Length: 330
Image (cartoon, rainbow, N blue to C red; front, top):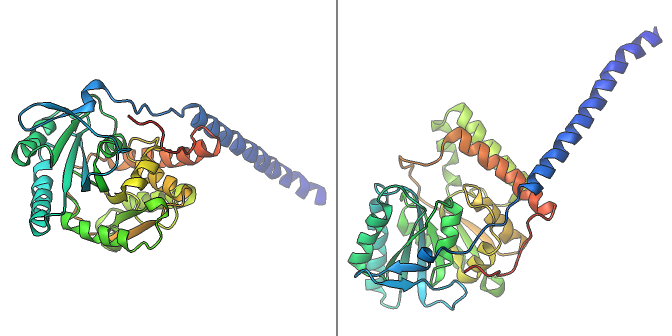
């Protein structure tokens, strides 16, 4: 009797053993693929990306993030095929910034629209604001080829002059006046090592409402993504993907100098880098409205971001990527 039971259990034990071996082989393959496929991001600029056009069409060189700040605020707006949505965002932002400057003449600012290799008239639309407000306030950086949102934000950051630098999406989903919320959040940080700090706008307070409006499948994808972010990369930040983040100049230089991911998951790597460098990060609620025309394709974009999250962690663990101090970025 006991012999018969042992014979029945043996195949199950054998199956479990083979399954474990197979799982280890798959894990090893994933690690190898992540390491071998890791690329060093080319941060060199094409000659055309080193200059911007003034209101009268003259070429002038962009400054470097390594230079001392000469303005209070820089706003970096990554834009890809945004000729329709950009004007709404820019009108709101410029109205707020001009009003603030009028009330406080010592407040200085610039907006850098980064055209990420668009196929439409994004650059032409953005240049209208340069002609209206002047190149001291609005500059357009047109990338020769599409780099992805992370790449566009990085190029804009490296070209900014502000003491504080805000990244803001071109769709205007976040109310621009909420910059005051992220500024207050940044100021609330009492300890800023080497004057480095980051404040993230957050939509986490709207999660219950968004779950009620989403399909079960999209809700599953959202929670799955949040789990992967927490498990592999960033803890303590509820909303890593909100495109409304404020950096001190020093924090921007430190984090963007080490950034590798250029597409949708770049926010996660950016915050991962910040936490590795012990840069204080705070999260504050902002007003957010979903705007039609998103470039995200729900299933495939989430799948790509999930893959990127796993690869981010593995590439740092295997040494394929390393955290660096301010490497040469120009």
